[in-house]
Image 1: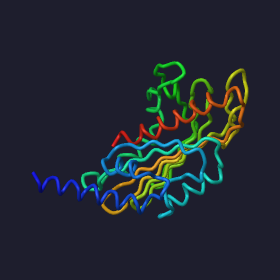
Image 2 (image 1 turned 180 degrees about the vertical axis):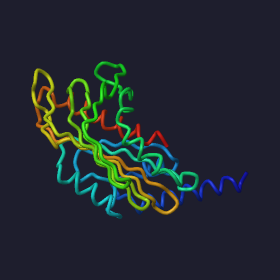
Image 3 (image 1 turned 135 degrees about the vertical axis):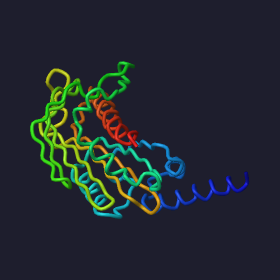
Image 4 (image 1 turned 180 degrees about the horizontal axis):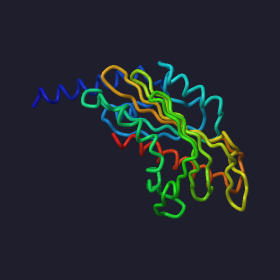
Length: 239
């Protein structure tokens, strides 16, 4: 019994040490503990300056740079850490999930305003798709209520022990009697997966650059942030 307890403590300690290298002081000790326990951590962080990861590898550098360039008004992180042992093929499993956009239809999304579940995407129409096994580009029309069709560009890049997914809107998004709340290229979701020591780090971040419309701000923020969290969580829960 004592040996089992000591082993658990060592594993948790190793996890905390690892996450301390990957993450900066924006991540609390409680959040690091949750990651070490294999739990999903979801954070509303507001601005790019509150990003919790260090640029330890090219995919993280690319992620941070893309979000800083976006300069979002609303921003959220979704993070999970899983053991490498027993999950050696995680990249091979996750890549097709990311590219199977037709399966995005029916992902349950909880609407706080209506206190009910809706489909995150109602329909998906693939317009163009290329994939050479390393880099994939996918353009699709993805219907998301109440914003209508989102002309979406998805890029997925596979590297050695890394996977990078980026989702960007190519059209203006309208809400509430045709008011434009997000201009093209101003909504972005990124998921990067990479190996760090004996663990895989699954890091998702999504941001929206949107004007502050006083009578819509809270509604728009809640709507977009919950959708971004839902999408990232969907990927991570496949593992």
